[in-house]
Figure 1 (spheres, rainbow, N blue to C red):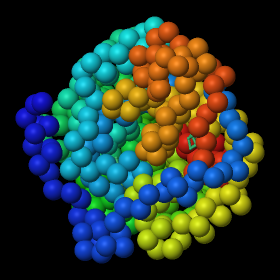
Figure 2: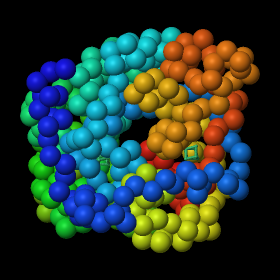
Figure 3: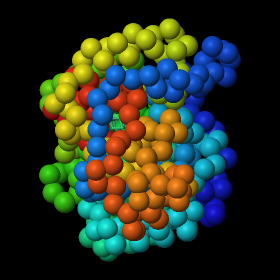
Figure 4: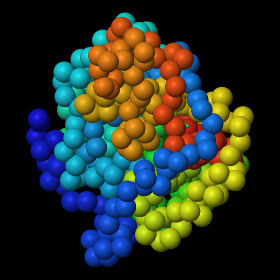
Length: 353
Ligand code: SF4
Ligand code: SF4
């Protein structure tokens, strides 16, 4: 554990509206969402060949956003160990994985983050860092932007809106200003200019509505961020909020959970089933356990164990990928899956349509 890590876990939680209310209003304490999602009419899905490892390096974050489906915050302590990181690197090598998608919490706060990135890039693997932008200004992270650029890491950054008011409301006071500064710093390093250093932004709605059309909103973001702050970026990914964890709990508190589920179900499109990310991605939690996606990880729904391992183990671990293919395996579905197939569809790479 290095000094920056120790300093970070002492960090105060984001002072956003949700965090402040949750401390004083019992109605905003976490509600379980899985019991409301398990009875489902969602169509069955099966896995294709594995292309992407999405690895959650831990739930610690310097922020505690209202919509966070991971419940990440500075108070969390879960983080991936060196041993599990070594296994991830071994899987990248032996299974010739194309993409390593690093998430958290703030993945950069795992003390092994840079070693993993260097190892993956040396193997020719595309590395995506799901970066909250404000992390660039945390103590001990001063050289992070330079490191990411040197390694050619793709950055997918959260900026849920181009308005100061909305971003600060959702992600904490001061977040917008820091995010703008971080994007300007990344642009100065060559990010977001259509070249090798890819910089994409992520948008998710503030409340229980579907995201607007991705291409239209991307054009609007590009125009406004360009005009007001001189910022450029490659793509905007629009994501639907998942009715789980902190966001799902907030819907239950406000009595809008059922209405939001109806909105997702009513807008389901079968054609999105082809492109949902669980078909060729597997999600690894900080202990190395496997899930069909990050959302299932947060709901505690592990990947199904293939027949070849039945009776030998109750759950799959990233180590099992060294010898076992998941191709053709059934995917664990529940009603939250409609969050991926509603409207234009939603995935970690944005709209599916
Ligand atoms: S949404 Fe991202 S930045 Fe916000 S608390 Fe969750 S992991 Fe951290
Ligand atoms: S939530 Fe989405 S990515 Fe996860 S299993 Fe359901 S359809 Fe697949």
